[in-house]
Length: 453
Ligand code: IFM
Image (cartoon, rainbow, N blue to C red):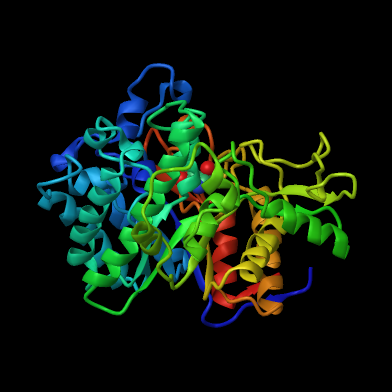
């Protein structure tokens, strides 16, 4: 690969989320979250793992920020835990919860690392889950009250906000397949309401951030749309991939139009509006949901592949990956085109000012070798190829402002517990020792030189 030069202003970062790294699940007044509840339900998480301690970042944040500084990160994407800040979901604020993020943000800023803060990365106060969680519209308003407290307190230091992380996961994995908290399998009608309530929470979040921020700030969200790449570079396959990307399956809330049409056009697709499972909403709510954003964050790891198909009225055919196609240990097929097409179709369809990759990375079987290092060549190759795809976007004139590698460190991978290692920093869960993997050292060079070789 020839050397690829990135713009000077490009934001190189790494990302984590509260429940996946903090631990201290009952410390300093934190309330129980939906994930604490799921973790403690036998049989739900691989190996019976829990997020009780995770990476113990709550106590080791200084060491972790020092490692970020060592890598040269320009920015760090973190999430605040709602149950740490408002333990019962509504009502009394926990000052010690705010204190933790005060300490963390101050540490980041004194090391010249820009915080990008996500207000909701899946840890809902259990008290709200007990009141139907995201099936209940009240949760969206409770979220707005929580957002207000966070923004009032931290917006002197935080100017990059994300309302939600991956709403499609909260809906589909939480309330349909039941793999994620709260572990339910709801009807299509309820699912559409969950989608709407999350979208409403997002819209209210945007309004709250803009209303209460003490400084001029950028507001967006981290979203994981369904990503589709063409089988070949032929115009017919590219057009087919775009059709597949915009395809609406009324029984499948991963379909992009469920999310993007309300968010960017203020309207559910006609087919949803005409269906028997149409959610309950008001025109005023649709206006809130479609408030303009400053950026869209995309979390992407792989893509479905399609080719043109004249015999299918939808115009495309899904192409399965060959059996031996390279995969990560998550069993996700590796396809760097996910980066390019993840932005291209969105940018062509909706007016979006700016993009970030708010997550991209890979889980592999990492081992610590005798030299006390982790030689994760596969991860370096993965990142190099995905950065190259991002470079192609910039070259083609798309406004891509930055890239957050998932993840800063190995952490609690939800229902898969600690079995998946996504970090560029290795976490030894027994000793909580961190080791910079080769990928972290490689990333350090990329950031320093602004070049991918
Ligand atoms: O670990 C998750 C993260 O919390 C959300 N996006 C995908 C990652 C890998 O599964």
